[in-house]
Length: 440
Image (cartoon, rainbow, N blue to C red):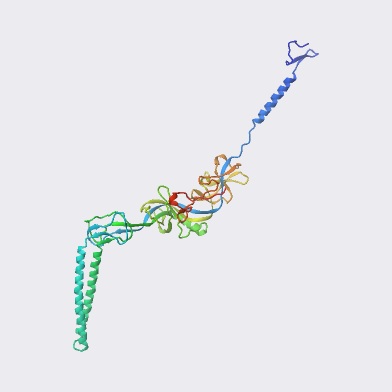
């Protein structure tokens, strides 16, 4: 059977077999196309295979042992160095006030004047009495001397001499008593000038002219306070203070020098007071209601920026940890039961959780008591991208305080003399806290 004259070269041809059967034959171009389609499908399957992702990127710090001050921010109140209540020591009518309220007065300045007339009269009377007693003493002396001469000549008896001698001694005692009365009257007259007992700034006048005051009364005329230098009384818990002392005794912390200016004040607007203070002592008695003890610090106050009763926060250095390790606060993670841990990048580049024991927060950084060693890389940012055993890519962690060359900036710029990197901290207004330094 021959193929149809209309069949083309691309159509399959049916061939007749000798047994009455027929079969189709495919042209070569069709087979080539099928092979190309199969190859293309295979390539598409290979392209759809997942591509391995690069390791996640995390920010790390390489911790190094370094000396870090043990710093605490504690509440405190400003107190005057000396305070004196001005009182009158004699009774009388206040006739004059001689000071400006709120001004600075010197010790010995006359503040009030009390009517002196009654005391002038008392002084004149005492002086007259003294003159009378002195005249009687002169007569007694002459009589005693005369009888002593007569007794030597045996023209006077011993009894007469003894009487004259006793009269002389009595006259001497009366003169001494009259002198004391005169001195008392003179002293009372001087007390009509109410003087400043100390130098300092005087407050408002509590009594005005025309007020009659009584001797020994509790009325206060004014109050004087010495404000330069000035005290700040800060409070700290007894337990924390005792632990600090134990750490210093064990050598874990180094004790600061006794004359070190190791306290800075944080004002109500967050700025630091321009001058550093010196810790004087801690009180020997704890408050039974709060369990806190008072620490007294002395500050210079030349411009009267600190007022008695003012609330402040004191940043106090209480010791130095010579080989401390610290990490940023955000690097500390917590387990379900609250135990601290950190992500550490191991030498093989994989991140693992590592439990640590933390100490206090110093300048925004946790001090690490146990669990980390120098040279370990701690993850600070990028926790969301990793799980335990994840291989990571590390980059140095940078803070806003870091310099352009990547080296950390020492923000513990307020040193013991109250200056900041050689400049007056009051001029800069810096509020930086001491923080740990890291090496990347």
